[in-house]
Length: 153
Image (cartoon, rainbow, N blue to C red):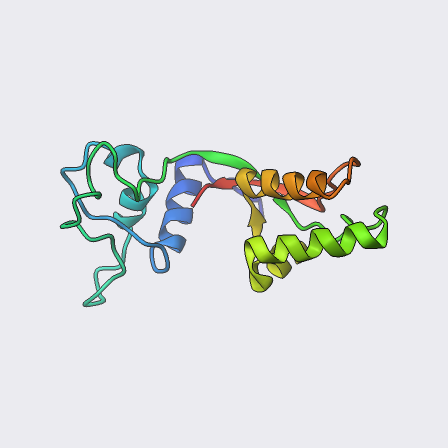
């Protein structure tokens, strides 16, 4: 039995279908950004069975135009996965300060999900981690456990 690989379009559709039940979607068909917006694109795969869905408010004046605050560009980025090795080479006092600050920034739950690799780390979050490490004197590399390419949901 041969393993068939999905095309890029099939992979995208599969990801959007998976996300449709839990992602904040948009149904504003008149929005000029809709073809580039993850919220609108994922909304096209939303299940039609439920009576209610979690969606952006189309009546809010900040939604649905060129300056939409809920816009999420349909682009993929390299995300990092886990940083269980981050503290190995660090002095203890530095590790404690960095850990406390990262928990303050991300919240305890997100911090540990990111650290274990259960939650992908966006480029923006990677920069936050780097900034905190540098702020507390760590000049060494930031060791991540792996990486994956994904959408910036």
